[in-house]
Image (cartoon, rainbow, N blue to C red; front, side, top):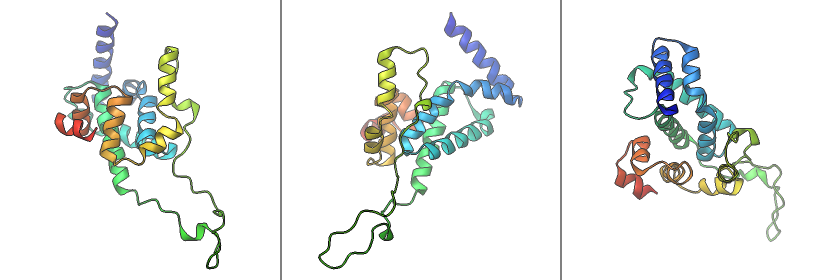
Length: 194
């Protein structure tokens, strides 16, 4: 019965948001924001970039509200938007190379010195990024593990589409069909990316 009541509330909020009610839109997407931020952090490896991606996601969702056909849940629709925002950000991101001036000059045969400045490419996830309220200890452990620095750093070595497929399937437990829908591809292509 709670699911039906939740669906009615979501429909009411969706209808109000489509009529321009910003507070209804905020309520509609509010319960998804923290999880979207964690998803964007996993994709981008940066808390600041993740925040920008979530803001862009919400802006795009607000602008596309009248085109949301409800063939999927609001949850899946928001993940599709945020995944595409992250993929576009990754396409535009320049290659991350250590600048030459980051290390002091050395003469021939001499060992290079320590870097002059730290170049941080993957940031540590703050504790507040995860929604850990009202979840079991096992779920709390899994959520924390999914944003551990080592895991997020290793994700950054994957091409963006493979990274998205891995996160959607193995971290967020989306089905192959949902993953394909979110990534706007076929199920075999989503499985192949995984």
